[in-house]
Image (cartoon, rainbow, N blue to C red; front, top):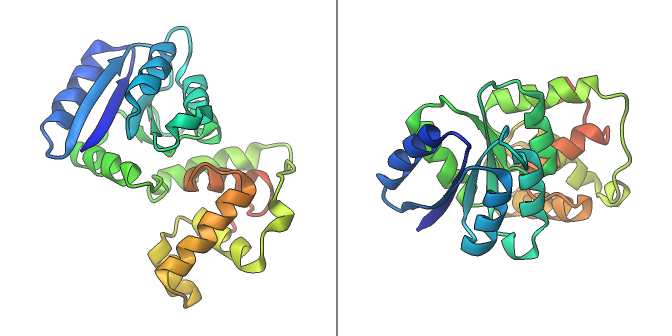
Amino acid sequence: MIRVILADDQMLVRAGFAALLDAEDGIEVAGEAADGREAVRLAQRVKPDVVLMDIRMPGLDGIEATRRIGAEPGLGGTHVVILTTFDLDEYVFEGLRAGAAGFLVKDTDPAELIRAVRVVAGGEALMSPKVTLRLIREYASRSRGVRPVPGLADLTAREREVVTLIAAGLSNEEIAVRLYVSVSTAKTHATRAMTKLGARDRAQLVVIAYESGLVRPGWAG
């Protein structure tokens, strides 16, 4: 059973998502929160698989709530998906940097929402949608320069190659085909790169890749 928390200050939005998710086999809404602090407390208590997190909430916003959830040792299996009204929202990039596994626009197709919850609960990041990569490239290209990232020099040549392909939005299966390796080998390289760079998941790995200068906007994809 995939357990989901809904964090949004609009009750009607939460009610709509709750009705949709609870109707699905294998998914249950384990709690709702109207602000960031409540979302963090609820996550600590419930330990959900997925948190659907609105960005703009009173008090503690969704970005800081995402950061706090990501920093909780006991919530390593909890994945946050940022909810936003606009797909090119500057705060979404901050959410990805804070450790979110990806983001969804609030008016996304119901089937896409369900798919996203299942994908994220399975440990993957929502990096396939082109809009996510476009967002990262947009804000990475506006940055004033690269920032030093501990562990970057420790990556092997193959791990750098895998990170570049992940930044292009390729899945483990696609990377395996591109590099003529097994899927498990591709996944191992990705996991080792995440460990060395201190990335929580593939979404954060992509952000680090762009911000560190390992990948430049326009190189990947």
